Length: 414
Ligand SMILES: *Cc1c(COP(=O)(O)O)cnc(C)c1O
Image (cartoon, rainbow, N blue to C red):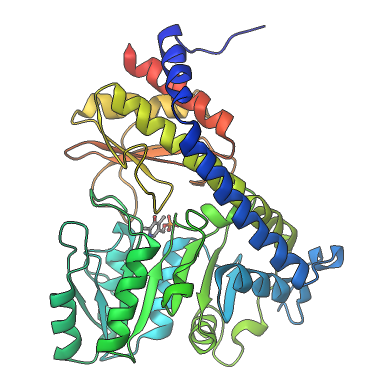
């Protein structure tokens, strides 16, 4: 048998480390079981049939499959209604239409988890852009987290100061060093906001967090949540798309922004999207579990090798992202290259740091994926700035995640 390029030390280290992770993996298996039961129940209750795979063309009127899929997502996420569309390009696009759908000139948007994800800076107007929310007269303000906790005093002050139309919470850490935000913390802050300012809409950027716990933010007080289908809920099978789920009237506003005022959810052809998105959701609990096991293994192995890691292997997780803090530019690049070499697609590409639209620093990005940019597939990226952190996420199966890790640390050990 022809052998893959893994050195013996790396192989043995990973295998021996894995022995100590049985308990952690068992918890992940239980989680995948609970989330699979949710998906199965939703598909059965909505009576999904083979004929629902037949998508529409043109305007996309009377798309039975599309409408059922949205009801399935609503059940899984605990939503009154949802929008699950291939016309949503990305997570950033889903967040953009949500913000533009909910906010009107003169309204204020308050982020309470610090500065949002890089690609939203031009959307909001933190970075100048003629088409930003700011250019339409929407005011933006933010409150930082303090030691990874919501700053309730500052939030309360802002909410008393004036009407805040939308509070935004980003759960996953993005390219920051903070911890990601668990459902428990979302519950606490939603209860707090509802007391102080009952009319404020709570919007949660749920990217990377779906199926990492057994509840969605909508079940603990959020009004609307947003995510990408080339992350967790697409299960590695959805070829593109995004979702928005929550209160019915709010989802309608977002649909009218994505599509056409007066036509909302009634239009939007699904083409051959329906079967893929359903298969993706069906696989998503297992794909998220494989990603979590890969992250836990990576955390333990790189931690044992002496690198700072966040989360630690036995920490409670809120998302599928694993940080490795290299404190060294060359080590970061070498590891990310290793993950690229450990992928199935474009494995021979030698990646270099590049400028990316929407990002401030150069980024080195391993994305040897079937779907371009998919990060439920094994992927790893890092902005070229101190302290040189790799953000690794995904793996459709645990075996491929473990292989990619073995290949990457073989490279790092050289
Ligand atoms: C991935 C991500 C987004 C959106 O990213 P896209 O690449 O546009 O899909 C937004 N917020 C967070 C926290 C993310 O992780």
